[in-house]
Image (cartoon, rainbow, N blue to C red; front, side, top):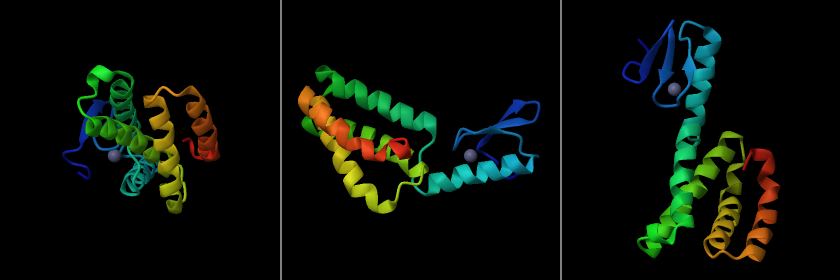
Length: 137
Ligand SMILES: [Zn+2]
């Protein structure tokens, strides 16, 4: 069976993919196509929703709690985890690849402002991020 080792049977023919998280009926052609699309997005750099949310949750917990910031490098990794989670979302919404650098620069500026608790800078950097709203960023 295609997907052996990564599909969990959920009953009544529905399976859940452990890679992309999709629940679907493997016998249905449209479900097969939807599933293939999900994997193409992952190959293009997207992450499944639950993985993005997990990265953001852990990253934000560290960013907002100085007791969890073991070292400056650890804080930077937390910021990168959040930035990657957001990037994975916009790449799944077809942001052009040449937007990686400006998008990440703007995201890091925003996260730096939040970590520094600088409200004026948070407002300024949030405004700068709006140009990517159409990609769900
Ligand atoms: Zn899948």
